[in-house]
Amino acid sequence: MPAAPSIANSVTVRLVLPARPTAVSEMTSLIEKAGGVVTGLDVTGSGHARMRVDMTMLTRDPGHADEIVAVMRTVEGVEIGKVSDRTFLMHLGGKLTVESKVPIRTRDDLSLIYTPGVARVCLAIAENPEDARRLTIKRNTVAVVTDGTAVLGLGDIGPLAALPVMEGKAALFKRFADIDAFPICLDTTDVEEIIRTVKAIAPTFAGINLEDISAPRCFEVEARLRDELDIPVFHDDQHGTAIVALAALRNALRVVGKRLEDVRLVMSGAGAAGTAILKLLLHAGLRHVVVTDVDGVVHRERADVLSGHHPNHAWIAENTNPDGISGSLADAVRGADVFLGVSAPNILSEAAVESMAPDSVVFAMANPLPEIDPELAARHAAVVATGRSDFANQINNVLVFPGVFRGLIDAASKHVTMDVLLAAADALAGVVTEDELNATYIIPSVFHPDVTHVVADAVRRAVAADPGPRRGTPRRDLARSRRRVVASAAARPAGPRRPRPARRPVPPVGPRAAAVPAGRQGRPPHGVPAAGAAGAARRAAAPLGGRRPGGARRAQRGGAGPAAARPQRRPARHPRRPRGRRSRGAARPGGGAAPGRPVVTGPLVPLVNSLLPPRWRAPGRVHRRTPRPPPTPTRYRR
Image 1 (cartoon, rainbow, N blue to C red):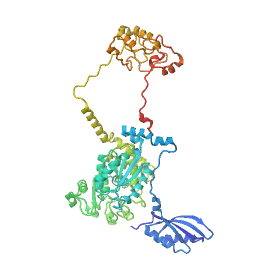
Image 2 (image 1 turned 90 degrees about the vertical axis):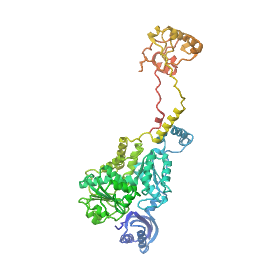
Image 3 (image 1 turned 45 degrees about the vertical axis):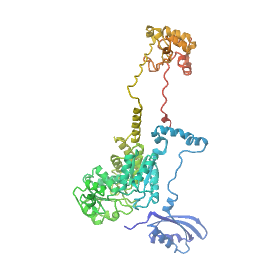
């Protein structure tokens, strides 16, 4: 399929033209004859005889741009200045910055953001690690991790060359889901070292997005990290592609009037994306599927399956191709309802598409060149989709990963399940309404305003409905708690435990106090005057109801010696005292004001009672216990 001029290969040429009326039209005509497309013309300076112009055009590739510039030089009187590649201008200096969310203008700002104020926040997180989600960037930060071995169809180009792609992925996270993502390009291809490094940096992030790691290493990296981390791990090349492919397939089958459970599907590609798509389709209800790769149809009798050197192929052979079909891709697609390709360009012929079942569906998703020219496929298939933005029905991961991570982070999920992926796919398919659905619109645009929110809501609901064992307290915290319990049990001395002391009886108050000997009457609760003769005598002996020397108190309680000298604990609340608040004029239990105590009446009662100790308070109201202050974290809860 010949390449067409595109925005990805656009250039801006600064040139000086003679100030004659036909100069611009002459230039644009030459550019169009050379195969370019002029998209912009900006006059940046003008004089009596000459003018300076910035001309922007679309080209097929960098070589084509050089050819057009050479043709432009042939125009008489034209001076060519700088030629700027707009793609490189967009990436100049990188695409990401780090900005502070709070101003730092004064010494107070510095003291709150950094030392000494930050120490209090550090201690709070050390005491309760869950506070890190509320007090740091952890609550909204994702690591985009790669080793540069499978970058955008370019292959193994290394971590440094992969950095522009990871920057772009982080920018998409921010644009579509307001997530702060950061690129992490690892200079290693060793599986153990990748896992160890990601685990070491995981405390900073709320999720891990694996990107462009070649198969089959990506399978082990993802599986191990999911088992060993308490934050969600999502491989976008696998699961992002699977979600958007399932969503598009559901709507394509709605267009042709078929059901996923009844169709026969042929998939080209048994790598990371193909395997993930296959697993999600099987989970969604697909029954009849055949997988092919560079060696033909994957079946149980293939040499690489029997040898055991490719466990992924062995799993595919075990769960697909129930009829034992063998041969090439052309043999497999004959009579099939759906072709789904995530493999290589130009491997599917027009004749093979023609041999498929009526109202067939073709998803040629290889990038940048699909498995078949979409225009050729559309001659025989009812619905055609690709991964390119210059054709209808673009199957793009940007539709998925921002909303999936937004939902996982908001739900504080610890893992990603197949039900979560299925919920995201169903939600994405539902964005296209019945009135909008047609053969050229089976998947919404990446700029559809509802995509991210709909997918995120579906993911949050799926996480809430998941009774998985890893939801809630992370396994590391559970293990730490178990170790503390075991350590405290080991430190406890052997033998029978000391019995708890019996609670002291609460002294009677009111009319019942007359039946109790004076020597056995204890001190009444806070704010409640003692009743009976003994209580009146004690109140009379105390100046203004204040505290008396220790000897006088022991003498009044009766008894002497060490037992009597020990201070007696006041009951926290009398069991017969009402828990509700009394009216201002209500009488206290056991009588009115004590002799010798100042009596306060009128509207000043609440104010005076709030300033005096409990024993000195006026009898106009019953003292109520001060409510416990709210927990500390609420002061910084958003």
